[in-house]
Length: 356
Image 1: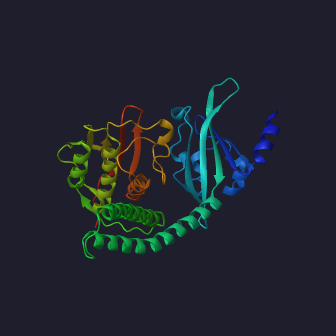
Image 2 (image 1 turned 30 degrees about the vertical axis):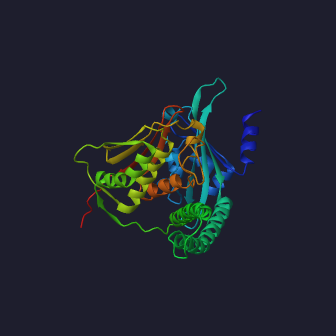
Image 3 (image 1 turned 45 degrees about the horizontal axis):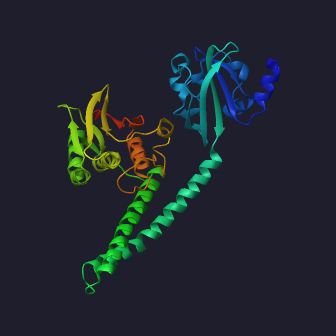
C-alpha cells in the first residue's frame, strides 16, 4: 500500500488522526481533524504539534491535552487516553484523545500517534442520565428518611414492647435504611460536583490538623477491625487553600476504605509531606492489593476492586474523593500490586498569598 492510499484511508475516518515525530512536530493531520480545527494541513506539517491547540492557533483551546506536555522520547511505548474539552470560543466539544507510540517498519520508535473521537453524544446521554439519577435520588430520600424515623420510634419503644423476632427484623430494616440513605446522599453529592454546583468554602488550613481530626473519628472503626492507624507527619508543613469539611471527607473516605480492605491486626499508615509546591497525603494499607488492570477504573462510579472487605460499600466513595480533589485543583492516584497492599495518594497545591 503506497502513501497516497494510506492517506486516503486515514482521511476517510470520522475520527481525527494526528502523527508527530520525536521532536513533537507534525508529521500528518487527517482531513477530519483539519476540518474540526479549521486549519490547512500543508501549513502545519513540520510545525510544533502543541500549537494546534495552543497560542500559535488562537482559535482553539483544549484543556488537559497530552500535546501540552508531549515528549515522545520520554513517553516511549506508553499508551494512554484522556478526555479533553475542545473549544473555538463559540462552543465546547468533548473529545477522547488516544495516544500511542508510532513505529517504522523496522520497529524503531519514530514519534506518537493521536486519535480524537467526538464524545458529544455520549456526554449528552450521560448528562440526561445524571439528571434522572439526581431527581430520582431526591424523591427517594424523603420516604427513606421517614421509614428510618418510623423504625427508630419502634425500636425506641414508642409503640410498646416488640417481640425478639420482630426486633431482629427491625434492626435489619434500620441497617438497610442507613445504607440506602448513605447511597442516596453520595449520589446527590456526586451529581452536584459533576454539575459544577458544589460550593467550596476555601480557607488556609493545616492539612495535618484536618488529618488528625479525621483519624479521631475513625478510631472506633479501626478498633473494631483490629487495625492500627499510624501517622507520619513532619513539622512545619505549609498550609493549603481548601474546604476543610470536603478535605476531611476525602481523608475519611480513603482511610475508611483502607480499613475495610486491611487484614485483622494490620496497619494503615497516613503520611504527609511537602513536594515542590504541593502537599502530598498518602494512605497505605496491608491488604490484598489491586490488580494493575483495575487501577485505571478504580475511581469510576460504582466500581469495586473485587477484593475481600469489611462491610458493604456503595462504590461511590472513591469517585467522590477523585471529584473533590480535582475540584481543589489537586491530583490523586492509586499505587498497588496484588499481595502487596495499596497506597492512595493525593496532592494539593501549597497556598499562595494573593496580592491585594
